[in-house]
Image 1 (cartoon, rainbow, N blue to C red):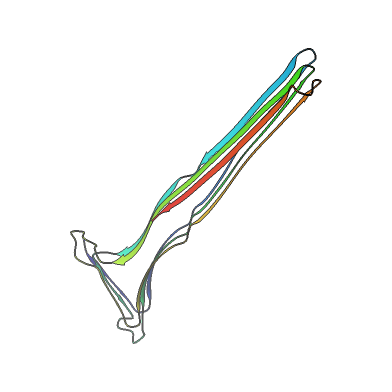
Image 2 (spheres, one colour; image 1 turned 90 degrees about the vertical axis):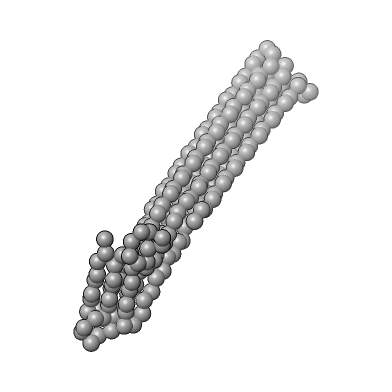
Length: 193
């Protein structure tokens, strides 16, 4: 269905999308083992995973309509069509592990920490005058000054991943001590327009 807009001054059409998504994930693992007669074996593990996904569509369009700015008043007029998308995604993930093994005969400490953070963003921003292949009459815009069409995307992605693992072993025998600590932190951020 078609229509028309006639204005004595400026005509402005704006679509704005602005999202704020914050994510926090953490894990902690602590273990202490002590043995007076034999071996003190301690193992601790921690993990954190955070996924923040956002899909947006921001459209400002004049479709199947005639828009005239600055008509019949002797004043000038402009037509402005604007689409703006400014999402902010913030992901924080952390994990910490501590293992302490104390034994008279042997001391063993094993600690592991794993962090995964994923932030995919898919957004579509468009501003137009017309139909872009739709089965309808085309849209038109007339201004005695300017006709501006603008689409703007300004995404902000912040991702922080931290993994810490600490292990300690103590033994009454100097050759029967073992400590192992492993930490992994991984982050992935993708933007699709």
